[in-house]
Every structure is written in C-alpha cells, then in structure tokens.
Length: 418
Image (cartoon, rainbow, N blue to C red; front, side, top):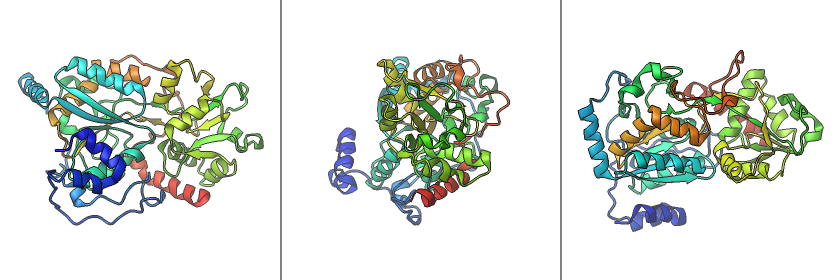
C-alpha cells in the first residue's frame, strides 16, 4: 500500500493516473448516483466562487450515509463514559489529517493539541494560496479511491459551493458534543451563531472579526492620505494598488462584494480594480510578501494575516498599516472555519480535535496563534482592532446567504477584467 505522504507526492507530480497506478490496492468507491454536470475548470465566473476542477463524480464523493436534513439538537451531549470511549478510539487511530492555509500559527495549534492528547499525532498540510490549492487535489484523491483528510480548516464559501452538494463534505455538527461547547452562554452570539451554512450542519466558525481589507505601506503613504475607498480613485495611485484577484480569491471577491452592496453600485468593480490598473494575484504568500517588501504602496485584499504574522515575528512588515474602511470591511471568520471530510479515516480523532478547538482552552490557543478573536465569550479578546466598530452595519460575508452575491461579483469582475 502506498503511504499517505507518497500518495500526496504522486498527485503533485503526475495527477490521478499516476496515483491510481501506484495505489492499485486502494478501494474504489461505488457510484451511488450519476455524476453532476461538469463545471468549467478555468473560468472563474462560471457559477463557482473559485477556480475548481469539474464537478466531482460519484466515485469522488460516494458518501457512506445520506447527510441529515435536520440539525442535531445541541442537547445531544456526550456523557463522560461516552467521551472516554471516543478518546480511547482516537488513541487507537493515532493520527489526524488536517488541511489549513499557510502560516506557522496553525502548526502551533496542532502542537498544542498533540500535547493535550499525546496519543494522536497531527499531520497538518498548509496550502500557500487558497482553497483553490486544496479542493482540486481533494477531488483528485477521491477519484483515485483515496480518502486522506479528516478536518479541513478553510473559509466556508468553497466547501459550501464545491464540496457539500456532491457529498464530499460531511456534517460536522454530530461531532460537536461536549457540554461546554454546545452551551450558548459560552459564545458571544450563542452556539448556533457559529454556523455559516443555512442548514447549520457543515461549516462552523472558530473565530469572528472585522476584516482588514485595505492596507498601506506607511513608508510610501502619508498619514491621512487614504481614509476611504474613494481615495483609491486618485490618479496618483494608478498602477500602484496590489489586490487579491476578485474573480477567484476570497480576499478579493469578499471586499468586492461588500463595496458593491454597500454603495449599491455594480460599476464600482470597474472603478476600483480596472480603472486604477490594480495588479492582481491569487498567491497569498506572494501578495503579502510584496507588501512587506514595499513593492506597492497600497494593498486591497492583499494581506493574509497568518502569513503577515510570520513576517512580523521576523521583524518585517512593521511598515504596514490597516485602514478601517466601512465600505470595504466586513465581518467574517477568515480562514478559521471547520469542515469535516467525507469518509474521514480518523473520525474519533477528528471528533476530539473539533471539540477541543471549540473548548475554552483550545479556542484560547487558536485565538492566540491566529491573532484573531475567538467567538467564545470566556476567551479574552486577542486583537481589539478587529472588534467591529459600533454603529457600522457590517456584512457577514463568508456565509451561505451571500453566495449568490459573491457569484455576481465574480461575474462582473470577469466581464470587466477579462
């Protein structure tokens, strides 16, 4: 049997065909339904918030059971005896496979979990850019009969559009059973306030904060020179704005959607991203590093906070300053949303991790390492600058009810930018 690490390398080198050949003993999932119609793999505006492979076939998804249509009551809590059985089973599994974005803070979270539960070793794989790096690979593995992930920590938009409909993501709600986790009083907005999908089953937010969409290099932009999105339209900034590509990248289409809805003006996409000759990229590390290095004076959706933290730890990036901008800023959970992979190989370890990271102790560790504010009311605020300003009507952007508006933003951007 090909090892998990070798299998992942084969996918990167030769795709599904090489992987399938190397894993001839891997079980092939039995199709349960005809494959869905294929989506265009390279056209970002085609009804998908990010570039993705064709809609996965039944062999890629093949859920073992149908997803429940009704949410599991929060009162369905585990007794101590039941929980001990989960812990024992997790220790027997011995592993947990987690996908996250880039940033050493994620690894430190996993280290803390391993210290709390030494019987489980975490194999955490960071992706440099966005969910675009993960889900094509995820579907390829599944097509080859490999089910290699337990927990996926990424923004909710991609899983809800790409992976939930074909059954490639399972409900995570049944995993959340510890009494202190499901207790409403321990959450700023109640336990159910953490769900980003309308069925309250699939995507659960660990943190929630105000975004920092607009950044400036204080070595190139004078204090007070930029206070509003309107200031970006000044011809002096033409060609000097670095931006996340709003056709495919969340840090681009989230502020794009927000400013479009806040201003009621669809043409704002053309004005801010096309007419300013903004330089677009989808690579989170490259975007952040270019701003840190002073390559551009202005960043619009160009900073990945976890990656910036790595630079700040090295004494770099202190030249960057976030500019609060009500028309561009939104409330969301960023990269810190839990999803549960279908056919997870270590379901008990996944259950332990999910309940731990949503506990007081686990959330405190996560908040510290992510430098983001926990949703838990008993965890201190990590970054006061990320607390939503009173009197500002923020949009909660990374939630299922906004998906249609995100798709519209991408369609407009594709028409404007080509």
